[in-house]
Image (cartoon, rainbow, N blue to C red; front, side):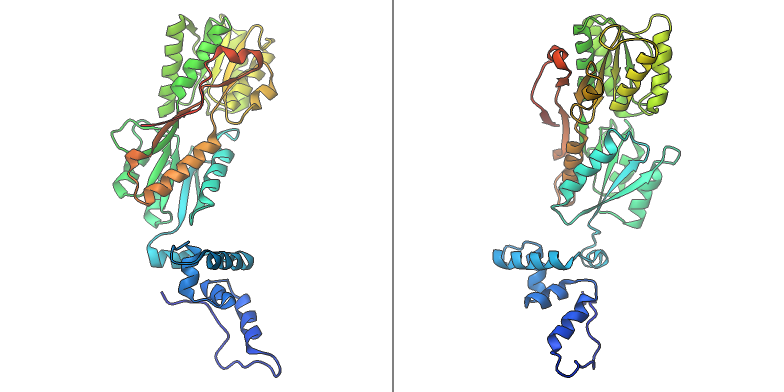
Length: 377
């Protein structure tokens, strides 16, 4: 492709006594740095500079280091429009994200993890947001129809997810945070929510609790089915009773969850144990129980998922927590999308992960303590 870097205008002569080279360097410095800028400053050819920035094996290590140092010093960034014209790629990975995702969980930590992985690649992260009042297909169609990304990361998957079907039909590389049940082989990273809920019930059973409630994800999502399945399996294994809680889900605010738990604990036959599927729900459950006059660890125990180590046990020392690491999830999802773009089959990019470790003072030894397991499917 013809290089579009502007140089000094033809016919412009240096002033008397001023060398031509500094004038040319000054003119280049006023423009957006390009490969030609680096070539001029290093005395190398444009092709050599380009190959050095890409770590081509036929370029010496000393040359690569010199080129990269100059590129860093002058703030060089590849021109995305030019890259797209030459390669057909945007070098963009789009994270399609519900703007109301739980702030204590996915939003900040997953973005951090994705960014850390992409930092060592030519790819950049662009967040494509949508709200719960919007058709979740809208941002997916936008990315596909505008060709604005080389790959996509989705969250909040459904058993039969139209976004997954659409991306698969259009051949755009994508990975999901969560699984589907629709017969389409696609890349995913998922947390074993069934194991989490079953282990949470086992922990509460070990603390002598008999009547348990689950603050679950909203209906219609795949991980809702997994968490409910694990919860019921745990109840059956320990011959415990379920206390229905249908007025709120993990989609509700902390304040709404707290009010629902206050009412539940103030009513007849309240639970003596609660499994909370997110950090926000765990905090809301604590507030609600305390507003009902109950003391955590005495009349009630709570086991909550959390998204960063020791957050909830710092908030309330008597609160039991099991961690899902969203930062690691983001790293893995980004790596999977890049691998898809480079040709790795989706069937080789499927992972379910679970630590099984509870964090809670002297109460943590009620759970098995296996090392973190990454299980390819």
